[in-house]
Amino acid sequence: MRWMRERDALIAQTRAFVQLVTGRREKAGEPPPCVVPDEPRPDAGPAETETAEQPENPPVAKPPIVSSELKAELEARIADFRAHQERFNREREQYFSDTLARLRAKIKDAPPPGPGK
Image (cartoon, rainbow, N blue to C red; front, side, top):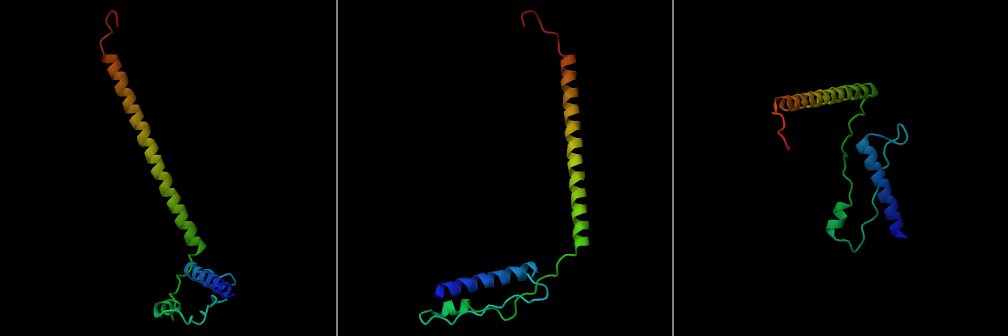
């Protein structure tokens, strides 16, 4: 069953690509598996045979971020987020206080209600 071989090859190729992009490997020190495409079908046109070829030099993945660098970056982002939220809370409380003070001033300065109102 040719389609099963093609499916398995596609799965292996996809896993190799994901590992290359993420910089991770399932087993340490082991290079990603290289998938050799099957022979081109005799009825395949030139466009299909060209797209099935693998690039000779796959792009090199960036080295993974060191955990201490990641931790420092996360802590800095969290601190910035908390400061931002505290600023919003202060501004909201100030707006509430100002609005309430204006409302109280208008109530105090308003003329007393007349009879029948």
